[in-house]
Image (cartoon, rainbow, N blue to C red; front, side):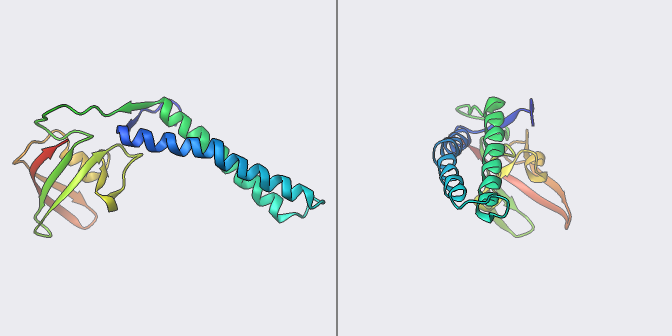
Length: 157
C-alpha cells in the first residue's frame, strides 16, 4: 500500500480520520488497561487474556499504520459544478435493463466502496464501465452471470 494513491471523497477522509483518532486515543488506552490487568494476574506464559490483549494491540497498530498511509496518499475527489461525463465523486442514476428498474450509485474509490449503501468503486466492473460516459449512453457490463445493460439517466454531485 505504500505509495499507492487512494481516491477518497471528503466524507471518506473524515471517516478515516475519525477511525484513526479513535484508535489512537480510545482503543490504545483500552488495550493498555487490558494488558495492565492481565499482567496483574501473574504468570504471563499461560495467560489467555494477556495473549488476546497483545494480539488486539498488534491489530490496532497495523490498522493505524494502514490509515496513516491511506491518508498520506489520499487524492481528494473534487466535484465540479456541472459534469458532462461520469467521474468518481458523482451520483449516477441508471436504468437497469435486467431488473427493469432505476438505480442510483455514488462512484467512489475502492476504499469507500459500500455497494449495499449505493457506493460502488470506480474499479468495480460497473464503476469502470460507467466512467467517462454521458447521460443517454447505454453501457454493457460483463459479469459472472453474463452481460448486464444499463442506461445513464442522470449525473449529479
